[in-house]
Image (cartoon, rainbow, N blue to C red; front, side, top):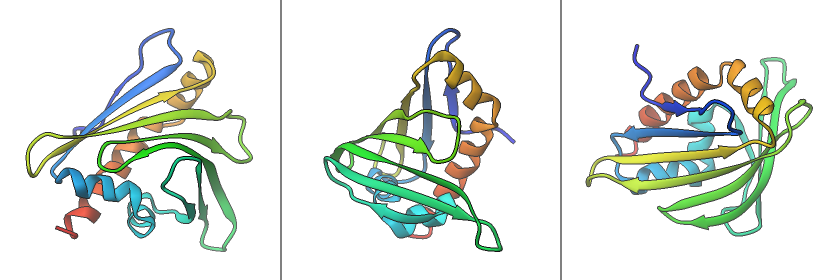
Length: 155
């Protein structure tokens, strides 16, 4: 199956550029990152906090079937412009990975299609490369496929 989420990781650089086109109007794509209930559905995680404003915070948590927390991430939202962009930090708790900064840009292609461009900057090339080895790209593609399916039901 073709990966619709495209990842560009240039050799020797500490960043990634991820691009995905969705069969969704821009407003619905943005809503998938803005509304906690929708985020929970496509990410498969619990949204503990999502303050969509400058200096707002966010925190997500995933538990296993026994209720044990297996993943927790958080950060600060530095910029939030509806239907245009979100800039935030991302930090996984209890992991060797340092905080990273993420720039999300949302673009209208047509009335019914839109594009998400994610630019993620890591502290070092080695940290970026470690993340790539963890199956980051296939996981993100699966999450974006779920986003498309979940938000399609809102149309």
